[in-house]
Image (tube, rainbow, N blue to C red):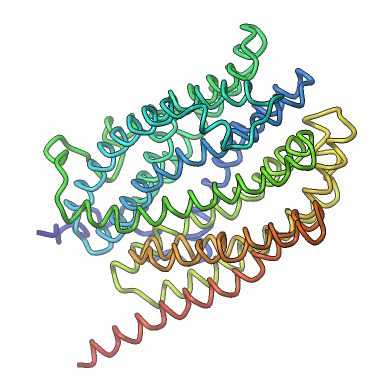
Length: 463
């Protein structure tokens, strides 16, 4: 039975006010900016590894970190299945005033995260050589890639727990608590990187260990907020056993979300394998450019993630007018902000690449790559916001459809086609072309879906 007294018990809770009644632009900024700040710090996980490994003046180890990155993405993809599915159900349950279902869902999310991490670690270690080869590692990078990947697999629980528990906190509007976990984890990683890489002489393996321990601290901080009772939702032992309805809802939204990230990882691997043909230093240069771009990526991802609980809550409350207002405000905010970031990248590209390497060849290639792929920024934010909004609404088929078209129908074929026609120059422009097309498609689809739901609701009310 829904707990219909929730609004009476928690009438002044600021988290619910932001989701339900705050002005759209302010709501997006209040939920998105803390996430962006946390994500800027979180991106240091990869940038710090890249920076300290770069101090060893070994471009093959730099390349290995880039080659191994899809394994981290796959771990996040699997945790995203639980985090996104559970978060969508939690937000919609809160909007429908069903507090008990929300508490039950967050508890089930914890249990499923642990189970999935055990599976990932076991399967990954069993097939480690095959995985490393499939990532595109060659003779000069194979050993380094294997070292990094093996540690990431062993620490899957920390990676997946950090990511999923942060999503669960955000689903109830506890964005600051989620960000505190990110910050604690990143600071830990920054401190431990030079210790493991240099002081203990572990090189790339030490970088991986520092990253995993940082994720472990992040996960522990998120758990502490739940255990100490500082969260809106209250996990409990009585909710450990999932109901068929909750499992269905989590996986209905979560599985497509995982497939989306896996498709992104697949496209990333295709991109790396094409880049290897131009030399392993090209892979290193592209890895640096992509990590610098991730600073811009986290801006749109932060705004999109901040928008997600607002959309889910108001869809559960059937407040479609507010959803349309949030969509319009979100697209303007994210596209305008990213245009500024793109301009900065264009001016300072060589200097930014040079932070991580002294190789003139790597700097030249990396600058060229960054100035091409930065052009995605004003467009990809709207795509991400639309996709996350569909997930929040419990309509994963649309979210997955956006990713399917984006990665398999547009991006990968364009990668192969443009690489064949114009070589390396064509390959690096495949993603910008893809995102321009996808912005128009995804925003139109979301606007039409919300408008149709609103019209259906008005018709039902009139009858």
